[in-house]
Image (cartoon, rainbow, N blue to C red; front, side):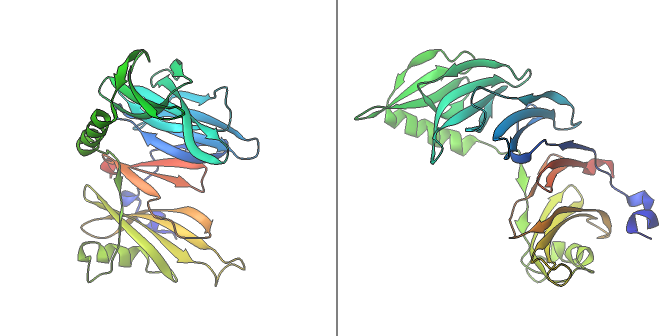
Amino acid sequence: MSWFTRDKRSRLSVAWEFTAKGTIWRLLPSPEGKIIIEDRDTVRKEVSFTCLDLATGRAWWNDVQHTERWWITIDSVQRGVLFLHEYASPDMPDHKKIIAIDLHSGETIWTNDELKLLFSHETSVYASQDGYEERRFYELDLSTGAMKGEIDARYLSVLRETVAKNSVDQMQFASPFAGPQSDGIHGQSVASATAKAGDVSLVECLDVGRKHVLAYYEDMKGVSAQASLRQHLCVLDGESHRLIFRDILNDQAMVAVPETFFAVGSFVYYIKNKTVLRALNLSEN
């Protein structure tokens, strides 16, 4: 009998899930209560973008593709506008072009093939253009892409620092568990979650309300012929340290990777086996 059937009153269910056609490459939550998914098909060399409601998983739009089918990625989101950029070349990390997408509809509202996006702030976009001898900087209108004017590097630097200091990331990530003596708050929860596990590594903990959410890697060398790690995600009641949810994030991980789940408000989000985005609503239990 599983722990699910022994105590159905404490069972926590998946609120919603989204299954990608390929691999979930990037996720970007927005202040408007949406999350953008970068879905990469590594076989066909195609990437598509989908926008879901953070609370319900309802699709605002899905499978949006652009002229460039592979060398394109999510950049940022500002005031209901999603920005994408392409890459200068396949072997260069530098980016090019600005593609502005309406976050509500998924439609392209403007593009700029000559500039590259640096950052956005309030109702403006700040971009640069590399010349033969110098780099020039410009301010554009966020909604239309219309040129507001050229700006100097010193002003841009000051503005960038101000934006960085004032920015608030709505995503909450877990912290490494240092051990029972260093982190007594999570010690009992970690002990409860890993009681039947073998060799455990990289335990991470995150408090969401009165719940403890943690992930850990279990060495499966003694179980499988292939050397691999299995990553578990667990949710426990913060007072009783009782396990109320467990799932496998990755069944055959080769290395332990941090920050594989995050919270926005009372919801926890994680990717299962690189292809399924799942959401847990911790306020419902």
